[in-house]
Length: 283
Image 1 (cartoon, rainbow, N blue to C red):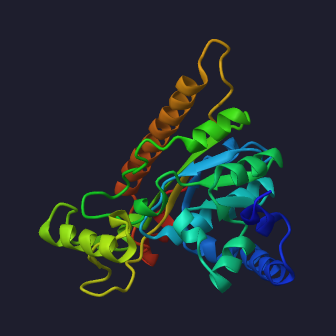
Image 2: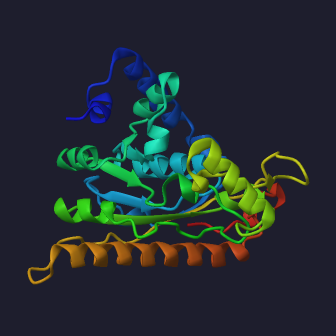
């Protein structure tokens, strides 16, 4: 068992105390979450035993999906969701590392994720990782997996159902002002690469309300898709089946995002206007 997994399964006292506090907070935020009327659908499709892998999309407002997905899964199945953190975020030290562990998160390494599956945990992964958070103009709600199939390989090896889950709303809290291939976009990528070694982790030029960085109020739209069976057919090769599972998951998630965007377009409540609460679409 790796150090990262040990931090989750055998937490030190300080992390257990933080975990208890976070669980209490999560249990008490339901009225606040309901106040903002997020649109949520597909909860009835979640396997009741909690043994499944959630595969989602990251948005610029990353805390939205990280908060809402575990919140609603817990309300339905009673199980705690284990998010797999991007390796860069998993390198956090001190309190940051303790908070990740207390929330149930671990670095998304193959051995740790496999061990969680052997314990029949509910797991959440974002194949796009941190680079899917940093979106330039025109990249909203686009998946950035770059052919990553590790999640599909693990699901196939452990016969783990995959539940695609899409969130719309998080990419509209801030508006990106420049495209990736613009002069400013290329400059910001070059600066990011020089400072961090990774041009994909750059945060583009953004604005919130007006010219400020005050977040724009936006309703969140969340949908859980049908579970995807990952059981390999007898005549299929392991590699080809992993590719099939990955591609099927990506297509299903992209379809969920398209449906949510279409639904949101006709929702008068999308910008959290209190006067439109009574007309908000429901899941």
